[in-house]
Image (cartoon, rainbow, N blue to C red; front, side, top):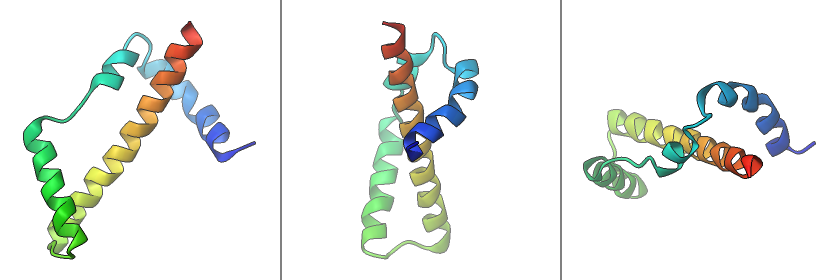
Length: 84
């Protein structure tokens, strides 16, 4: 079994509680422009190693949130495809 398959199998029961009927909302969700600009600024400064410790922690939080949202979006797509 692949890591992705195992992850999906482990997460699917929780997502079945959270997502039904909301899959498209999950796929369409995006941060507002001000937040995108802020994250882009942190990313650029991170590349140049110019972040303070607090900014680095904040940026890492956004990176983690983005990974979590990517998982939610992937699972929402699976649910939409399975319903067809």
